[in-house]
Length: 278
Image (tube, rainbow, N blue to C red; front, side, top):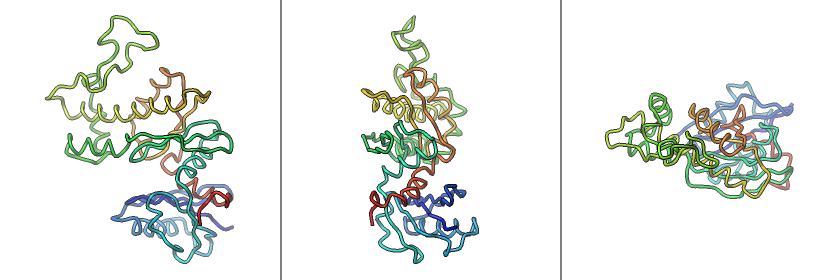
């Protein structure tokens, strides 16, 4: 049976996944100096690692900002381009099995895509995401290695930098428990340990995204949010999002292949020819 490849091409990172018989072949991620090098490197490695011949590939579906650099066939194979927000929605819906949700794509910034049955619509976004985390870490912690920052943060104490409701009130406020965040970084001192600062930066980014997601659903009955993108791999997600679920009475879902959902959605779009670009 033939296979459809979905490829999410970033400026330096490419994610690729294959779908055959409605099943996903093990996705991979490749980083290189530019989108074209990253694309072809990921493509070749994917075929090699999965024992796939070029003749088995029926079509290549491209999405992501780097896909604009691809002007024709890839390795002689026909290609089509998929609008990124559509790919986000299709992939998140496939992985989460939810069709009434808001997809929270945590990339360099963060976008929100409404999924309501067959309707998938970009409803907004914020300029807070992985780029914010990397940039602040570079300026404050002298590293933009997110894995290193996450490891540092696990040794830190968020209570040393954030001000909680319990710090300013003798009793819970309406709708706000004592351990809810009153002000991010309000307790930070000039000599704060880097571990505490790392914890504060990650908490700030994730809390902001979570709260913005909740706000994006105001006026609707949506209570489920599907988180996708590289930031879903942060161990701090398990610490930050559950309290937000309780605070807002909502649910955050992180699918198995959360970082590859956009590539998965691109592959799925092959059967929706009216919604893809030539």
